[in-house]
Length: 360
Image 1 (cartoon, rainbow, N blue to C red):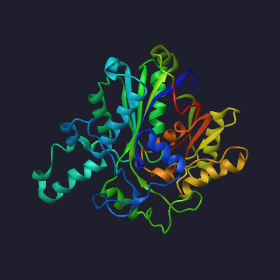
Image 2: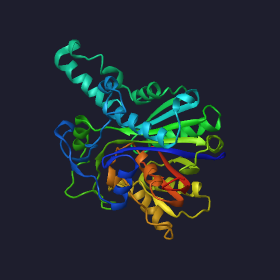
Image 3: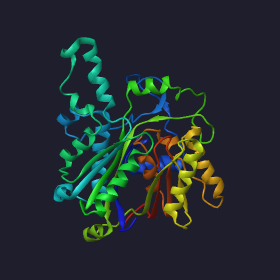
Image 4: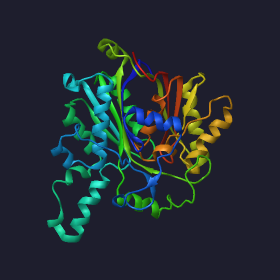
């Protein structure tokens, strides 16, 4: 990856609370955000954003019209722009937005279809319908912050936010934008809980634990990252939170566990290019199909630091992989490796340099 890119803004809505301080405290304590899901979200244990409060950030009229994931996305984006000391209205035409999600549009689709199936066309709400598409969040963000650059939404399970980050890199290198808002967002809703229970993902007797084969934890939230060229950030006079040294993805020719493990190892080797990480953020979540991919990588690299697994703290779908990037930015490190194993599709890895907690 050529051309210096930096992350200048970070915004977080997580089950442990909104904002950087709540996330840092959770990561430092290692205390999982496990709780019984509210009845409105379905049965089972999970990590819901129970203390989320958008008052004062989202206008009341718009708040009523947004689905859960879009509300999280709006607040996280607001935080990221403030953190980057950037007024988006001053350069909206040059700001792109790339969103990664697993469940975007699904909550609204359920809310739209249930009354329709029960009462017919009279039960279909025109107010809900615009949120039934996965790219609803990116549209709401573009309108809210005046973003007029390129826009894309990626739908995937574990790695949607990394696909969005990859797209942002291409836009910036092509000169199509000066900054890109990269965001991962997902919300809990009853049907998601029912589906996970029906596929036995929630069938466990103990908490998720990496390497145990038991997991995972349902979660929700949003993570926003403002990505800029180094030159643009320097011209604005802002000190980056981190530089994106390299980003790579690789699909396994053989979709089985062995093939995906080899792809995971190759993509990590590609981003490191002979460098030794001083910190490692892993994407395991307690399920063998993901844990095994990084277990092989760890066995081949015994000198690497022990990976931190934020998915077991904040929930599996809290941004479809965005929580991995968030964790990488919350503690200081000279060279942070982030690996994002996937049960299908591409394996991702990223290398972040000069991560700092505070800026002068």
